Length: 458
Ligand code: EPU
Image (tube, rainbow, N blue to C red; front, side):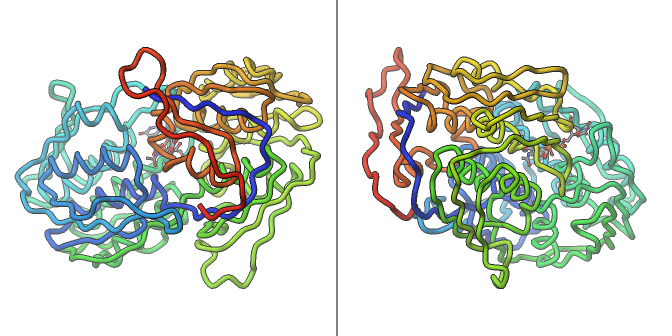
């Protein structure tokens, strides 16, 4: 297992190209199951979760061409997908347990192959993550669903095709992102019209609709809570570029803020980041964007900081509200604000595993149920800390960049699921950060050592 060793205090400066979005790419990759024709995806990031989805799709009979590697100045790689063996319908526990997003193969496989068997995802560090809404939506389309040896087994009705329906996808915490992706991806091949009410409005759903439309689907209302789908008999191939990652962009913006840095983000989806940008400005960061940029999903944004960070109140909500996937990173930033901030988590009320670790670094955070009160401190102090999930890990890296002394972030495999080469990208922006093997593991001691401190393009 790897860890990061960070010597805090360096001011991050330079330019970084934001990679394609993990959370957009995963359902897009699953949607390639909907056709026998080739689907080409550009700007796919090189991440552990993408590798897992790739392995899963290959097991499900998809041929994937492209090595997945890309340079630092581009958003990602080109991958070509083509179904060559539609008889393989079982997403096995071995893969599903490594990545919950495997669940988004369920809808496409069911609609195209008439049957799907997907292992039920297990527990998750950020709290309970049921899939009842996914299943309810597919049942409304006429699927029969049963549980067999820990697998969800879904089948189309005897008529051989799913049928359109009006479906309500709201749950106790709002809409469901992957649930919307699943039901949408099944409804495109259903007979007749489907109306999804309380659909997720996340930009990643809009990106999925862009691909499905390019494949021949008929969909209206993406980005709103009501999506209308008129089913078609077949879909064809398409070429599509994955949208840039708004969470990666927000994380690097926090890195600029916490190190009093000056970063320019290329390929930045500012149009999908209204709430985090508003919060950063309230905290005191200065964000300059070009209002005439031809594509506000792929714009350039410069982030600078006037030393003083102000406290704010944040509540995570479904899009366009403040995203839960940036809550931990903003908490790290607010640990150094002058005053008390209040952060309320309305999507995953238990997603606070980073609190105890930040406290080990001198942060002052009190948690009361789904709310954390962060009292700003003058300085954070380096310490060994444990990464517990993807975004919590990112918050510990941010805290380490600003802390006095050395911070060791252990178990960074969580980070590798969602941030491409984070340590190298931070090094090139001037951070002193190294990836090492955790002691007790046989691999060589130091894998990468920090170097460049000059302004660089990452
Ligand atoms: N929920 C239900 N029933 C369901 C599905 C969800 O009650 O059937 C609840 C969840 O427990 C949660 C809320 O609804 O409280 C929202 O969950 P959602 O289904 O929207 O989450 P998801 O689709 O499984 C995606 C992202 C997450 C992100 C959430 C919320 C991917 C691969 N994952 O998960 O990303 O936090 O939406 O925006 O797209 C991450 O990248 O770190 C990450 C966890």
